[in-house]
Amino acid sequence: QVQLVESGGGLVQAGGSLRLSCAASGSIFSINAMDWYRQAPGKQRELVAGVTSGGSTKYADSVKGRFTITRDVAKNTVYLQMNSLKPEDTAVYYCNAGVTSSRWGLLRSYWGQGTQVTVSS
Image (cartoon, rainbow, N blue to C red; front, side, top):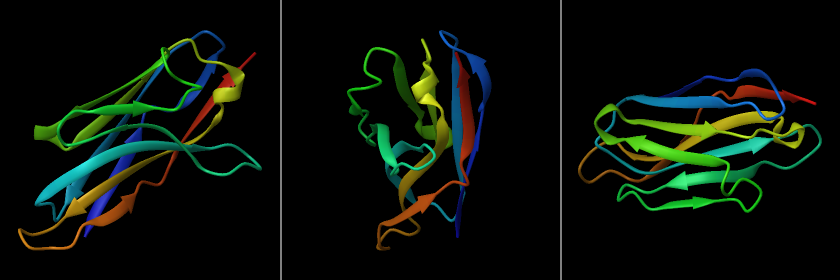
């Protein structure tokens, strides 16, 4: 089994910054992509940013230039640095990872429990 544990959420004023972390642990042979999603009340979950095992990154248009995703492969950890936060960034942020648990195992998708980010105006 694989566990993803997020941390770093909280309450911040508009224009402020937060850094989210997501650490993967358990039965891990390799991790493919690691992504951050978010879900605001009454809205669908959306992709915020992602990073592949090779280090390629992608971002939602709404966060480009403000958020930066990085990854520590040795620690099985992904980070999301969020700057210039806006009230519309308020949401529960979830970490997602594609993990294989053995050399010939299937790639499975795992989710963290989510961390609340609230940006006040």
